[in-house]
Length: 224
Image (cartoon, rainbow, N blue to C red; front, side):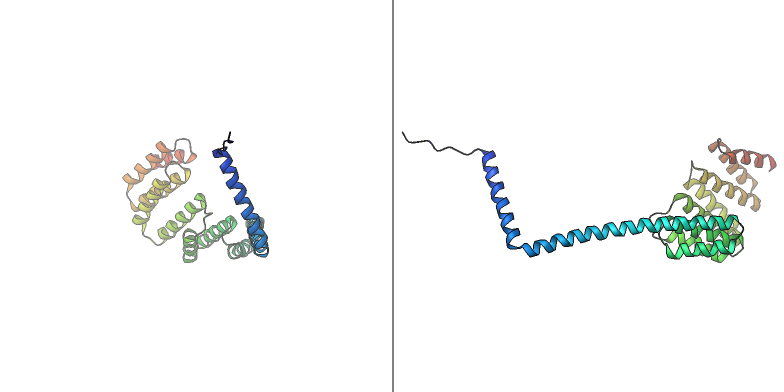
């Protein structure tokens, strides 16, 4: 009786195909050994380079943070000139780091306090226009408020008051929004628009009842 031919199952076929593929890969590596080794070296070198870059970036951030501490110490000690020099160094040498952003706003505020409004406005704008993805919301708000403060000094109170109010809406629900609204109320008061100033102050007291600024708003309403 003739022996029956055994039919291969799907699993056995897949195993055969895998073995054939594995053999072909081994043959290819053997025939192209030098190219294969170079390729592996390039990949490893690339990974090492990326890792080195990341480590360097982290070290730069740590160095900048340490220098920022020196700025704060100098500022608190009344050494404003020294603090400004250190802040400028951070801003130029560690661009893109969180400390560089803090240094930029610090310098802008310092220029504003010294009535160097053009310089302050330039620094506030440079922070907002930078492509730094690490910008923080608090510093962004500080820069926006700084720009409006510079505009307020120029005497365009009505437009600035409206901008302050819009900024308050942008940061609604946050303490930053409350402070923006307070600046709007102040500007409208200075314009003589007591009704609108009062409305904004009431809005602060209602929307931010748990913040100290709410009590301040209520006291200002009583004084209007």
